[in-house]
Image (cartoon, rainbow, N blue to C red; front, top):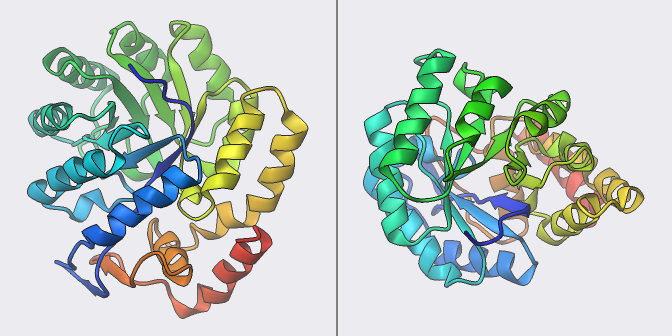
Length: 296
């Protein structure tokens, strides 16, 4: 497996201007975003995740996005495909496609809405790992899924060789030590919460799968380098500069604010899919101020 650590951007799916149920994906802008991240030292790309509006994509679009990002990246940066689903057979199908497309790993969110037990979570992820021989990263985000994968379950799954890590988006820093103590030594821990990611890495985490990295890729890379090499003071200085941005990119449901910020930077058009809508005008100045504070 290629080395996956540091600042991994949860990349947006750029779309043509508009806000509708079938707003057209802008693949030319997507190619430019990949170049933007390669040139700014982003350490990896997650495609078709929550920030990529995976919930509004058809399966054909989902697979097309994965294939194109692999092609655009051309081996220069690790590509991780979001392939989770609340249906086990759908997750297996998406993960199998991503493997054949040439991704470096897959990111699998806990099944949402149907609230499986811990045993159900274990069996779901175990079966996907057995069926598809590709590195897999668990993704725990109970605020969105209504399902919390506990450290004990993560520990059980970490014994499966191609389950290589977890994205923990609870914001609970006590879980870093708890998971590290239970899992094999090379099991990777990624923060899924930009606001607490610096402390997460200083506690022993390996990186962050980041929304903020969409607009501040070099700063997030530098933050991760400092935080994972025991340069706590330098990491804290960068994090303080980004702190308001971490918060204000979630003034409305992700990825509403980050897509608006990218449009202000001239990197994407004003396109998003229903039921998400364009950022409310009441928040425009708050996001602009956060960009300025971060010196973007």
